[in-house]
Structures are given as C-alpha cells and as structure tokens.
Image 1: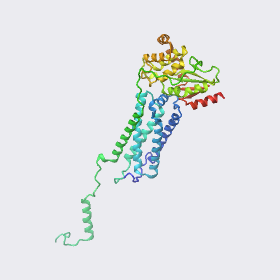
Image 2: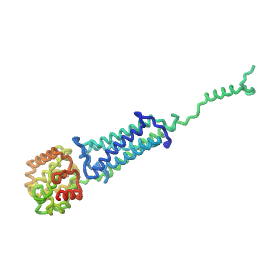
Image 3: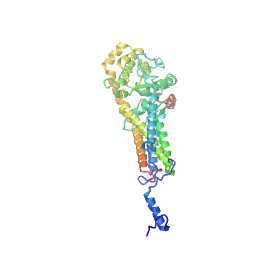
Image 4: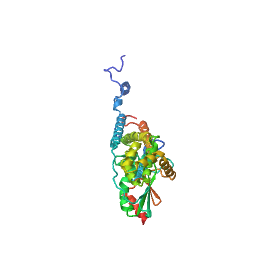
Length: 155
Length: 263
C-alpha cells in the first residue's frame, strides 16, 4: 500500500510537498546556523531578544558530544529529501514517512521547549522558530494525509 | 398462458440481460473488510513515532552526565599560578602588547572549560614570556536564576575579589573552578565558599570581615550591570586588544588571536 502512487490533492494551490519542503528548508537553515555557531564554540546571536546565550550555554544544548542543533540539521535534511521525493513520485509512503519523522521531532522539541521554559529559564528564539516550523510540518503532513485518498480505498 | 420466464421456456436476450441486471442490483459487490482501528496504518505509524520520540528523549536524558555530588571534600586546581605576575585580577606584565580581558562567571560551565583548558597553556606560552596579560572581569549573570536570597555567582565573584585584595585572586580563581558543580546547586554556598577560600590560602579573618560588609558583592553587581550595558550577554566573552569573541575559545583559537594582535 505504501508504495502505491496517489496523486496529491493541491494545498493552497500547490502540491503540498512544496509547502513541506519550504518548511523543511527553513528548519534546515535555522538548525544549520545553530550547529555552525555551537560547533565553533560560540553562541547564537539573538539581538535584543535574550535567551539564546543561556540556552546554548546550558548542559541541555548538547547530547553527549553533539549539539542538539546537529540532530535538527539531520532531521530537517531527511524531511526535505522525503518531501521532494514525494513531490516527484507521489508515492504515498513518503508522505507517511514525513508525517512520522516530523512527529518524532515534535515530541523531542516539546521536551526541549519544556527544558527551556521550566529548567533553563530562558527561551532561544532560534530554537522556538525551529520548533514552530517543525510543528507546522507535522500539522501540514497530517492535514494532507487526512485529505488524501487512501491507496487501499476506491477514493 | 404461462409466464415466459419459466425454466422450460426460452427467453430473449433482452429478458436475460434484464434478469442479470436485477441479480446484480440485488447482490452487493463484495467489499474488503474494514480495517480494525487498531490495525490502521496511520495509528501504527503514529504510535511508532511516539515510541521513537520518547526513546530519543530517554536517550538524551541518559546521556547527560550525572550531577557530581557536592561534598565538603575539595579538589585542588589543575594548574599552578606563576609567581610574581599577579596584581589584583590581572596576570602578566603590565607592558605586554596584548591584553586579554576575560568576562566570566564562576558558575558558568563554559567559563570553567576556558579556565581549565585554555588559560593554563596561554599563561605558559604567552603570559609568562610577557606577550600577553590576562584581566579578569565579572559578568555574574547565572546566579540570577537561582535562589533570590543567595546569588552564588555574585558571592563566588565577591570571594574572588577578597582574594584579589590579598594578592591571591588567581589562586582563588583556580580553586573556585576546580570545585564548580553546576549552576545554582549549592557549590558556592557560604560555608563551602569559606572552605574554598581557606584552601586557597586566604586570611580568613579578613575574608569574613569583607564578605560581611557586602561591598564586594555590590562591586560584582555593578560590573555585571556594566557588562550587560556594554552588550556582553554571554560568558565567557574574551576581548583581545579590544576585539570581543564570545564563547570558550580553544587554546589554538586564542593563541592565534594573541599572535595576530602581537604582530
């Protein structure tokens, strides 16, 4: 079933994969910036908005020797590939994979947002923007799936 | 007259088709049995993603090093302070061509990393030979998120200023970072801070008297406010001959900056 090709119903007048890919690209750029800065030993620039430094300097910004942002880069890159592949092939399983991976990311980002608000006591605007983009990607994937004809039905 | 649709009577093609249509209408096409909700692919995918997400969170939690217990047993600094080079919170020749200003917080883990891994070889390679001098400044922000009645960042920095008055700032600096145990977790509570000061060799009667006045705490808060107004919002911030760099610079990074500034 998941390898079946199902033409996508347009969302906002375009193939929904384009919307997903655009959001994935936003996430990739944000996570990429944070990764480069943190791997270089610095902290992200927040301008007048405070909080980035405290979050980046906290022990929660790293998982072992790897900044959390690097995992964000990997997740966004895979999601982007899935979205583009779905756009070109309309293979139903690629949409489901995008939905599932973005849900995994949303769950982790929920935990990371909890850490920022209740443990670290500061919110990084870059992280928050990434988290919003990931939530949007999950919601868009869900809505698209909901509107999409199922490959195992007549629709 | 008998009906024409009895079995022994031939029927026309039109009648046979009508009968077939009626039979088709009377019998529904077999449809696939509906998938039970618990076997819905979307539900399974969602549950799988939830499980993976929770597993990643568990992995992240387990990867965090356990907090070191705060005990009364103190650790000695990992590097000795060169003699004859310290004056107050400055270390090195006053005429050195490169000044490295360090805006730091004794509770900051990155500051500890910088103090323990970057500073010692910088001192050996650039401060002792007279190429650079280090100047310590307080950017004691982290305690603001802790107990409002006792700011561990301010108190530890004030203790270091008492040490500076006694000519022992860099010794105290080493002892404080050696006994760092996280942010606002009691590593620099009054009695432990006193033990650290005693271990660093401070005159404790003078220490007790100066800490009690609160003068140094006010100075720390004042310098921290100045740091904020100067745009220093992260620790450590390293300023090399007037150019600021944020983060715990590695030895290689800072050495390159000092060499460039000295040339």
